[in-house]
Length: 185
Image (cartoon, rainbow, N blue to C red; front, side, top):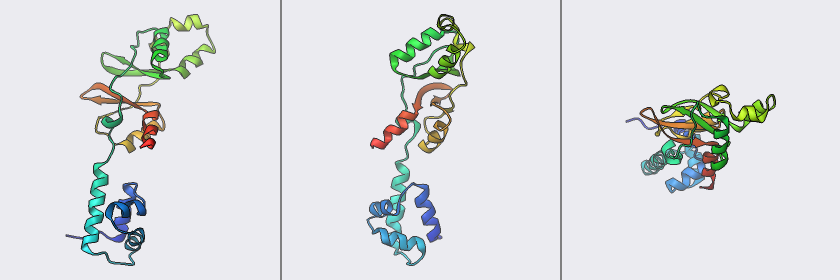
């Protein structure tokens, strides 16, 4: 068995989003000791390495997955629905966008922003009777229930929501708000 280098221990700590203090606390050692191990100034005892590895394993088990934070009641519209019905649905549930799903398959999205852009050029009465298919945007990206939070966070940088699909069926969704709520811990 080959023991990790000080640099590899540091890389692993960073991959797990741990500070030296956070790792020290979890491993039951001091932060200066972690710093000295990572810099190569000290050769740790086997018992200390074991504590560090145990801390790494605990953090890895704590990974947050899509299924841990997703909403399971998926509010959606069909591409054949009217824009007015989508607006009513968004108002009722307090959403600024909803997925467009036909026969269980995500085919697009509709948002307040899209509707407002269309309203700049047309009368509201004309827009309210339009079919969603005539103004919908791209479908939200999809992930599996076991997709990790860091992957979802990157997707949410470019999209307002992510749909969770299990065996081809939409089972949930995650929004930027859901991720931000995790800060409350």
